[in-house]
Image 1 (cartoon, rainbow, N blue to C red):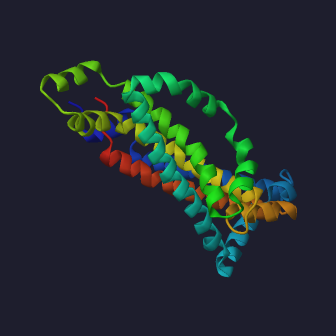
Image 2: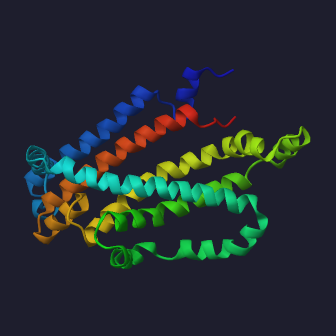
Image 3: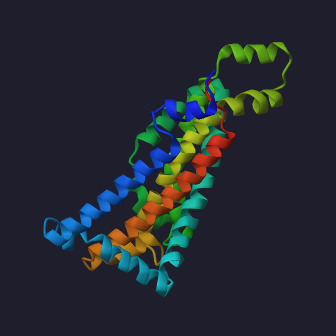
Length: 263
């Protein structure tokens, strides 16, 4: 029998502390090489800035109170759209998978809508819903919904028919089937959609701010880009990268705690 300690190292041959050190080593090496390359003239700071300048800009934003103010706006837009899109996607994913008639009638339309370049509709969404909070939320929903929908749908369809048959044989009701078979069986798929959707949610919120907004990290990036300020653009991107990495780590911890493990 494989022990938990052995399981933590057999998949990639490294223990979690070693893996963490390797990852941080790569990040630090990248930053150092970037800074040295800029100082040596190999990298043009006008186009790519430098880590030192980016750090100075982030510090200035923090001192001025701009960083967290604009970051909270972006995270609020992304969060509202993320949870709304996740709820709608999971709900409709279950509905389509559980009802063959609805699935047969509407599945082609869902596929067509998913194939459409929704990012291209962002300016129209801004036009329809204005420059405020709601338009950014709608843009986020348009991306998150389909990720959650298809993951839930395929997770539902992937359930072993023998399990469903056994549950029906012992007299399980629809409610019992939902909470004791369907939801547990699709949790792994749902958590997978959650982690993918986090990045999409932030991207969509920033896109909406980039098109038209008066606050948010996308707004800061747009202003910096308009002034040919590569340092401001990079500072905004670094802020988003750190925020998404933290959120992904949180959801990864939740997944490890609650998602069923594959045997």
